[in-house]
Structure formats: C-alpha cells, structure tokens
Image 1 (cartoon, rainbow, N blue to C red):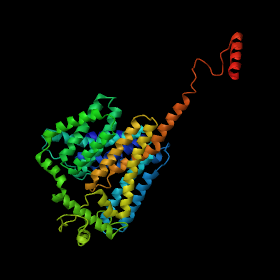
Image 2 (cartoon, helix red, strand yellow):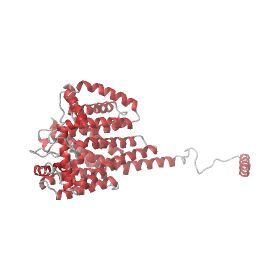
Image 3 (tube, helix red, strand yellow):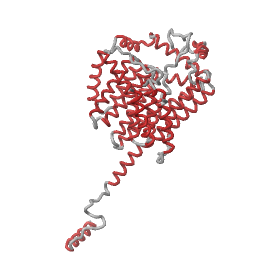
Image 4 (cartoon, rainbow, N blue to C red):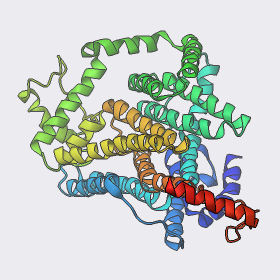
Length: 475
C-alpha cells in the first residue's frame, strides 16, 4: 500500500519540482532526512529518490530563466574552503583510500545541497517550504516514534532507521532538538491560519521532546535543556513558555524510567562513567592524530581504521595533561571520535577544524545580527523570528554535537544555506520594501483632488491669501 501511494504521488511531485526549482530543493532536503526507501518494501524501494530529486533540482535551476544573483558571502566562502580542504585531506589520507573517497563523495552531496539552497531559495515562501520539509522528515519520525513511546508507557526505545543518516539514536536525538525551533517559527507563522496546523505543530513539538527522552541520549538531553533555556531567554512570550514548560515536564515524569534517570545522573560524575571516558579516549587519539598530521589530518574515517587506532595508541601517554582518568584505548577495534570538533580535528587537521568552526560561528552570529537589524528597522516579526529560530537550531547542533560524530550531516549545512539566503536576499528585500512604502506615503494624493488642477479661489479670497502671505513673510 505504501509503495502504491508513493508511486502515485511521484509524478505529481516531479511535475511540481520541474515547474518550481525551490520545490525540488525542498524535496532534496526531505529525502535526505526522511529516507523514503526505508518506509517501502516493494518496487518503490528500488528508486533512488534522493538522487532523482537532486538531479531534478540541478536541471531545474539550470533551465530556470529568472535565476537570482549568486551571492555566497562569508558563510559560502567558508563552506567551499572547508570542502576544498577535505579534498586535499582525502588525497593525503592514512585511512584506506576507497573509504575516504566514499565519504568525500557523500560530503560532496551535502555541499551541493548547501550550494543549491543558496542558488535557488530567494524569498520567504521558499524558506518556509524548506523548513516545512525539515519538519515533515525529522518531525514526522518523531511523531511516529513518540506515539509509540507514549503507548508503551515509556518502554519503547527510540532508535534511528538502519542505513539512515540519522540511524544512531544519539544523532537522531540531536536532530529532534534541532527541529524544535523550526516548529516554533512555523507555529507562529501558520498556527493562526489553521487550527489543524496549530494543533499539529504543538503536538509535534511535544512529541519531539518525548522523542529525545525515548532515545535515552544524554547528549540529546543536555542539548534539549540548553535549548529550552536559550529559547526562554530569547522569547518575548515568557509567561506562556513558563506554563508550557511546566505542563510538559509534568506530562514527562510518568514516562521517565529509572534507567534513564540513572544515565542522566552520570553526567554529574562523568569521570566515573566508562562510556563517557571511552569517548574521551577517542578525543585524545583524535588530538594525537592531529598533532601527527597538523595541516590536513588523517582523512575521513581514519580513526576508525584499526591499524591507525593502534598506531596512535602507542603515543597515548605522551600528553599527560589531556585527562582520561583510568581509561585506556580499546585494543580490539577502532572507534569513532564521538565529537564533531575532535572528528574534524583528527580527520581534517587543525586547519580544517578552523574552517569548520568558522562555518559554525559565521552562521550563528550572522543569524543573530540579522535578527537584531530587522528588529531595529521595525521589520515584520516573521523575519527576526525566523533568523533567531535558525540560530537556536545551530546552537543546539554546536552544543549537542560536542559528543557525536555528526560533523558532515545534511541538516546543519542546509541551515547554513538558509542563513545565507536570509542575509543576502530576504533582509535586503524586506528593508527595501519598507523604505519604498515609507517614501511613497508622504507623496500620496487623494484621488478626488488632481495634483495638476489647483482649486480656484474667489477673487476676494485670493486678495486675503495674498495679504496674509505678505504679512507672514515680513514677520
């Protein structure tokens, strides 16, 4: 049934994408994060939807007559420089070359998504559509898994779909947190237009929170708590948020298991937790790899290649100031870096880490600057809210990603592209429109009084006006 439904929709989707390239870009994002092949089992499962929609987006943009001006700005420059850096690191990799080249190809697709977001998306409707595609991918999965979690009384363990970019439960948990601000923005924009949309978005936001709890991810919990505090500070509706938070916490308590509580308690004593200290070991080995290969690092997936892991372990005690407690490297298998920062440091070197941090920082601070400038100019409320919510999503990634190997995911680079679009297109267009409206207002003339035909005066009135005018001039 799912196959027939998807195959019936496919021609309609393709027609819409051919007519409007921004729809193709949105569907590109949707297939990257939703993974439709994982939901079908028959003939529909053999179609490579992401590749198909990507090709339609590229061809649609090339054939589009009204292309917006190409503006990559600071964010685009950093992203492209970082990609160039990864190309060089792949050529000098110490991991198996075929593995590094495979992951370079995957990252190339992510960068292409960023590029076509920047090239194609040009107004508010386009940005809103992409954000809806994010919610209909990550948010839909949260709805489904969150309802299972509630129906099971908290017994259902939420995990990612095998083979999916969000297959790991910790990465899925972080994606849930990053989607919350997007839902908040869409709720403000579309919740008043439709009761169904308002209830659907409020329900999705609640189920995203339940989804984070259901994954039992400590990193997701930390990111969720930090995002809630940051959102509370940024929000102009603190009273409403206070009641919502209290209600949500009260609803969550019956579904929080003792195992999850004990996992959260280990955050306060991280140096005694074997799982966390195992991550610290991986961080230290990533640092050692960067010290050995400071410019371009070891290349994609180098740390997980066991001969490299073993070689790095020989220098494990060379940096005693890098505290790892009693933990030592595993002698049977290599492990992932478990941190976007140490992952990039080890795989791309200190130069690559610098460029990656520039990507994050420029997008984060640029979004904040857009929000402040829009508020000072008196722009419509949707513009600063959109910029602020995307900034919060980037903040959640920057914090939650500190304990995950999640550096090259499509979601964060899509957000980079949207910040660039808001900076280069939406903000200037909105301010120009406001300036045009303000400039036209004083010049407005009532339609009933033609500007070129002054009202005739009676001769007596004319003499009175002339006399009063002369008197005023002398005064």
